Image (tube, rainbow, N blue to C red; front, side, top):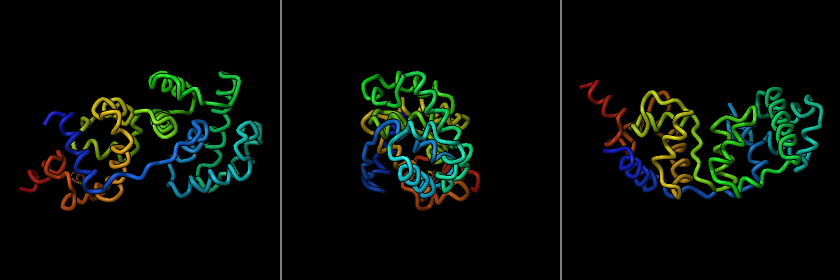
Length: 225
Ligand code: SF4
């Protein structure tokens, strides 16, 4: 099956299997950016607590976060893990935005084309491809595909992207395969599938709705024959 047809088929099967993913309310792009930095290398529950603590302390006054003592910010976001690193990263990103735009506001991302928005975000030191894609998809509703460890692994195993494609390369490869209006749902389905069935250590291929077209499953069956 050619990759576009495979992507269509996988999408339909995952939608049938899991149902339509719950919509996620859009929030301000800058808030999404900070929340995504907090989510790096930690579970969602921890980063949610850290973000709530940050908002409880500073409201949405990102200038106050920028100017606060770094140790104070780190203590506030302690639940999110890597608190010192993330506090420095958040303040650095806020400083860069302030220097470049003269204000702490990323609402312009709604108005500019996807690649222009991505270029701006990626030009900020501390913002990688996944973080940029999260802001563009979740805050702006643009067709960007954030590639986390689940999206990367599941896409490789099924054969949507080449086995050797890096996570960074996977962003462009998947965006080229997935129609714009399916980007959000496909992203959510791949994450859910990676968490529940196509697990890193022991994928549950016997329970998997896409096993008949999965390259990893075909290889495993041939290998054990
Ligand atoms: S068949 Fe196995 S390896 Fe392939 S997607 Fe399903 S769980 Fe993952």
